[in-house]
Picture 1 (cartoon, rainbow, N blue to C red):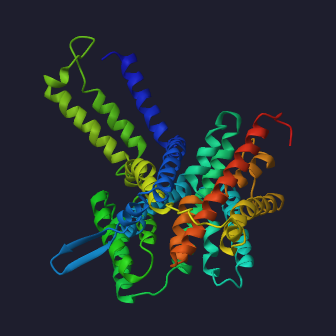
Picture 2 (cartoon, rainbow, N blue to C red; picture 1 turned 180 degrees about the vertical axis):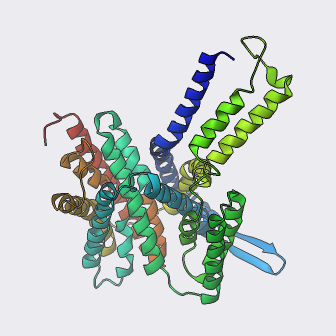
Picture 3 (cartoon, one colour; picture 1 turned 30 degrees about the vertical axis):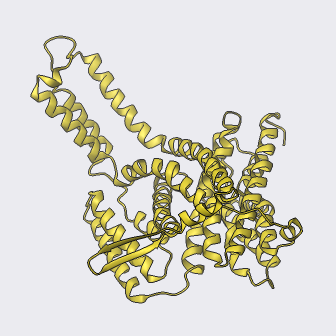
Length: 455
């Protein structure tokens, strides 16, 4: 092989590694933004189906019982519960992987950069919760205070993507980091405030299995199957313990190794040594892989080198994101947004404290809380604004923070048992999320066409 060709190959390898390190956020944002379209389609299908002449089939389908039996072991639940307790555990597992990656090498890795979205998320949780609590103090539905505290990252990033070329990249990064911090807060809220009874024997087994995860990580075990088996066992015992099983997804994700078998420098050295084994008599090797066993072995070594340098965290994140974004979340949306509008009285809707608490929490509480806490943190020197991001951008992002949807729908299922109250909460979540999206996108559209210096 010619020296210039060899250098080009090594350079290409370096660029490939740089892309794996520098651009994970861009790929993540693109997938999340694209999945928001499927979420909208799934929601529309659910609303049409649940209000059509076939509405009974919608509810009977979701309440179909599915059971697994293995000897004495028997696990039975409805399809809706398998979606909310099983598939959503994978969603939370993926969220946990992204949270861990962001804290290690992403926007949350540098303290001063991390503090702004974290503090913003705190304000975006406290104020909506207080607004809901104030409107439902004597209603008997105070337990739903957690519903308006969450932000849906798919819809929020999807909305920003509409004006991506006219908005500073720092805004998208801030919004993504804020939504991730917000998701972490929602997980903590679920674990602490939405756990009813605890079966301690199951919980102790969970702690033992978590210790096994920690030991596997400590001894540099990089087989993802080990973490998958232990994670499935933890999910099962968390389900039986009374703690919501989605919490298991986040716990397991925190123990997935974030380092490969060896580092990038060793990878590049191995690639360089392996490429030198591709020697051909002519300038072009053609399809030598079929004729030259040494070339075949070199390709296998390259494949193994790629596997060793890639971390289990990245491997799982890359594998699960498409399934979560394009299958799990749309299925969840279709299963949880089937509202029946027939017989609904408008005067009762607008005076319902649950609906008012959620709508005002999302539309008013979220942007004010995010903007207020962000402003105080920057003015006191605790945090700093991202590059080229102005306060007008933060306000637009704060408005989009009121898009609760996925996590809010999930929390509504945990907050109430009465199906009528759950429907009220769903109406409020859809209303508040739509209004937040319209206000946020309209405002960002306006400032994106304005002069860069205009506030």
